[in-house]
Image 1 (cartoon, rainbow, N blue to C red):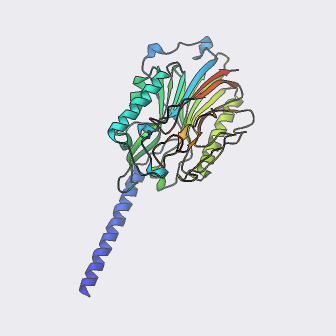
Image 2 (image 1 turned 90 degrees about the horizontal axis):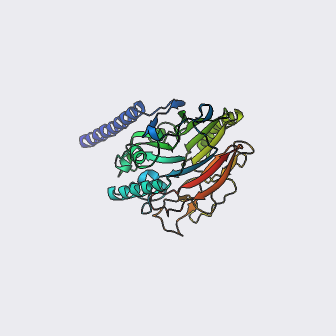
Image 3 (image 1 turned 180 degrees about the horizontal axis):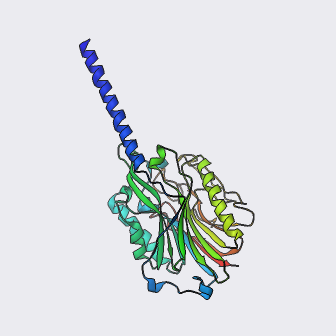
Length: 362
């Protein structure tokens, strides 16, 4: 009987210790949780001020009406063709250091080839994360690519992600980057609905969109928006994010401003139908954008001939691994698309492929 009581006491102390450690961990993570304001100014960094385009008519920073853009989710240099991912039905957590560097070298080489593009909208760019061996990819890309200025907004900042238990994801710190050949007058970060509530939200992304603003000769503004919407929800969080973005888009257009939105929507564009062979395997809900979002007259621009995202339940095998289109642009009615083209890189260095767009302001 005494032995039983002793075992029971040890068991009780062990369970209590585990509960206290877990509570302490959650308390510390809550105290250190990243809590961005609804709207924040974003620092504009110019690598070479002498290379920035000079002021145009009436103090405008853009004196031409034809512009080009490029959007790409680079997958933090960790989701190249050899990788699957534990959160998407695969098993891997991160690539080897050698593969990570190979992917980053390939990403930078691809970005350098687009040296005539005015705006480069990038998602999943790390500043200091375990998954990318704590590289400062923001600075690395900015220094390597022929752009005058860039702006960065954080959307993932967690001191420690405990999944998977056997090999934790660890520290995550990264976000979205817009590189620009033309120096903007201002840049801002706008918070969107979080991926999850407490306590799960402590370890998930804090979604946002970032705008770069440019005054024009006609007294209006060009607003270039880079965004990355939620991936792992039942569609409810994503809809809240879209509702927030909608208010912004309509307000800007009502002022007569020109609005371009690009990035990873984690949502199909109108008119697109996926043909998944492994439907539902990664747990991402299929959702298609409303043709009249944010209202009638806005234009979705994408290349229907090329998948921009491949699924991560397995390493990439062309012709077998599922591909979908979730990366594209949305234009206000006062902008026309001249050309759009998906860039086929074979998913060699990222689980996404870039999209190029050329537009004209009407």
